[in-house]
Image 1: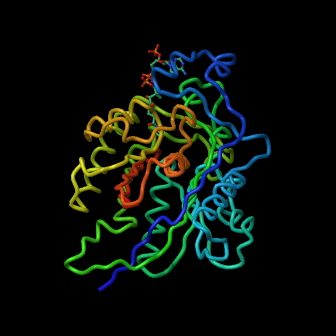
Image 2: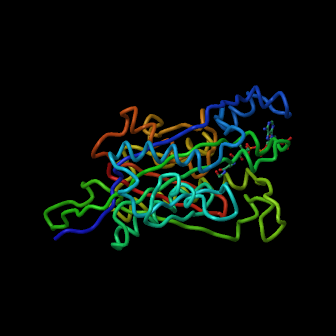
Length: 330
Ligand code: UT7
């Protein structure tokens, strides 16, 4: 017997050229490199150029992912783009990327789950494939978060950066006989997504087409978000492991959403995962919201850290509140 499953056929990412250091920020707001590094682990972030849009970053990451998968846009039947910073209120940024890729068929839509957006998009794509409604899906996380920051609010503006990452998910059939361990075969083993709208006031944008008719700026009660992040992430990671009958010690690589080095350290400590098994980019990228996981994944795949057959755990938590995890056999 065989079962349909999706696997990651290729990944790619893109960062805008301009690097902004903590020292540069400290020239315009009351902050310091010492405070930012000690509280967050962030040393610098990339900021998109004037006129460089979320779709531009997404397109470049998508091209790299397609090249890595040795595919072209003609092979795609779905584009799912996770973003909180779309080019326009509508149409979706995904349809813009679809046009840039010169796709003449298929469907494209955006997903909004803020920093958990990539996990949500991956989960949707995986389920489309398992249900037989798609064969090859481009999943993108792309953000120009710099455009929704209040650059006079030191409690938020130092934390975020711009960037994009993408993966190509492909359908294949795995052996599902009793003498074959399906967990050992490559692919997305499971995805787990959650939200609790009761905590929407902890992290939000104070604008929007329906409420203020303005774009608005990011507002966050950081300490509270931090507290929820540590609890929810450990919980959802255990949920993913239990669903596949794995132990924490079975994880080869943790590829987390990159919000704060202290959250990464705390989650890894709780899980008993050594620091060298955690892919960390927050020092150079800051928090790129939906883009952070595919950016980190791409880096660790291309530099050879992540190898075929290894067990990869992706996890994220963000505004909503939303959180989720995915267990992947590479
Ligand atoms: O990706 C989505 C999820 N987001 C997150 O996971 C973010 C979670 N939260 C965090 O990462 C941390 O809470 C922050 C990095 C945002 C803040 O760190 P903290 O250790 O929780 O600091 P705090 O908010 O308790 O602020 C401590 C002090 C305050 O001063 P007082 O009131 O104690 O005098 C702040 O005003 O640090 C001050 N402060 C700053 N000082 C210098 C806040 N931001 C800055 C800054 N530079 N940029």
